[in-house]
Image 1 (cartoon, rainbow, N blue to C red):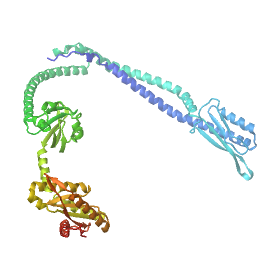
Image 2: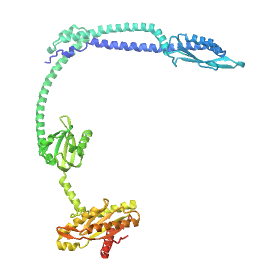
Image 3: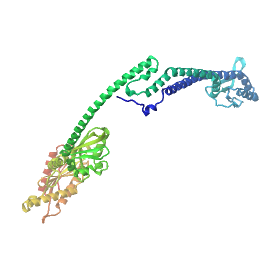
Image 4: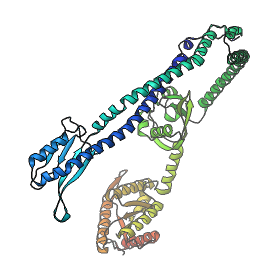
Length: 547
């Protein structure tokens, strides 16, 4: 059986009578203030109109006399009239602006006050002229103030406000007495009686002392409520026992699921790490540790907000974005880890909840080996394996780009086709190893003497090509620059060299082909440069430039 006893909170609750009294007094005070405000507003408008009428009457009465005094230059009379008007209790300030032959007059009321523009009257001072005309001689301004109006308001509403307040107070007291006797007092007694009852017994026999049908209904409803509470309490105990059993069962299942998931993550071949929103690593598997070149314990001691490697890589910014937007982030990056290992990987960052807090789940795919193989394939496709110079394919691509650049800027370019003399004899005499090393030396010499914007390529065998850009807008200037470059190439390659104890005096034939942006066929340019090289080889003289 439910046992109901008055708790400390119930004993500390404010009585109903006090609640009612506070609200009643608040309503009474609000009504009193509103009534007083309404009376003051009406009285203010009335007193304002009365003061305006008063100062208009003063202006009408003294205006003609003051006008004649100004016209006749009677300074003493003007001063006396202005002073007399200023003595009126409703007047704060009187002013007469300056007129021809007459100085400005301004006098404040002895009672003080600030003139107000809303309680002010200005009257034009005139005198009769010849032929029925009117002559203007000046202006009379009489001003009162809002303080004067409010003083009259206070005097006017004092008695009505007192009487009204007394009547309201009497009515309020009467209403309070009636409500207290008919409503508050019975409920207060009923509350005290209920607090003394043993509600656990399920009976309210002492409630019969309160007469009235309402109290009988209240007693009956209260007893029915106790029975319903008892049944609900029994059902609640049973439901609580079932719920507790289910919670234990699901807690065990959840614990097993967490252990299972942890085992999956721990043994997964996919590198996985879990980080809290403050940067601390809370979980990491062996695959993640192998990826970054560390131990799992080292990762668990890491905070990505404090790691220099994370600062230098975009991964820290990606994690901050995921925390801020709650959206998955993914991409590729190449980074040197905190443990000194350089990797190229694909990442995926997911926001998840753990213990009611935001956490980041990081998944990685190691792309290091794949990118290394791709780089090797790219070099094989676009670079000569022996000299590491661009091959024919990459040369043609850069030649196409140079043609487009020449078309935009209007400058000339040159292709210098280079063939080493007596290279086959060197190969046959000393072997291909010596020949290959000579090719590497030639490649180094060519790269050392060209500009950074030029391209040195090896087409194969002992054939090299130099693509030289921005030789000038005029054809003659470009030809001179191309011949100068060809001379430098011949001089650079003619220097003797020693390869594995073999002294070799190298020489080269150079064919030069000038062209501009209007020539769009890169293969044709190379063929013409090749032909120029053969002409140079046959002639055994300085380059003949093909134009």
